[in-house]
Length: 173
Image 1 (cartoon, rainbow, N blue to C red):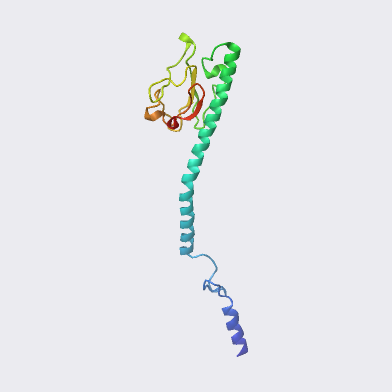
Image 2 (image 1 turned 45 degrees about the vertical axis):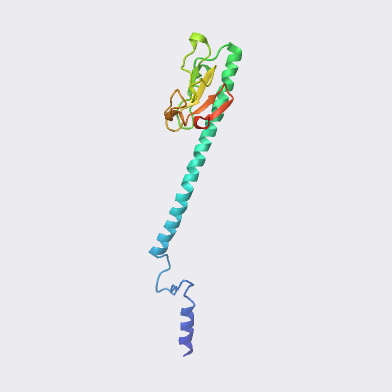
């Protein structure tokens, strides 16, 4: 009777805390329910994290666009200090191929320069021109813009406004 009791004890020690028999009669592994619960938890975490990540990504892109606009402004003023006039285009200051974080080229409009000016002034919500010298801006993530900031398509544009005292999104003006 001793060998039988040893066998019984050995077999009972092969049962894990979840009630599975690990003695070899059933292969160890996960049940379909356990796998489905794990996938559900991972999906829930991904659903919660994705909006935060996308929001962070948008903020980072806006920050990069603002930084680029400030760098372009500095080069434009450097050009003005050496040539006595603002450049006609970004190509004159070697920024023709520079693109915003959404992959579109930055827009530049020279306003100052009398008849040599090459663009229509962009206007704020009260239809007052936002710059007297030049406009530089990104058309933003919707790839649409308008000359008036009051218009819907211009709300996500990243702009230089008020002769360089403001850099940011039109919706924040």
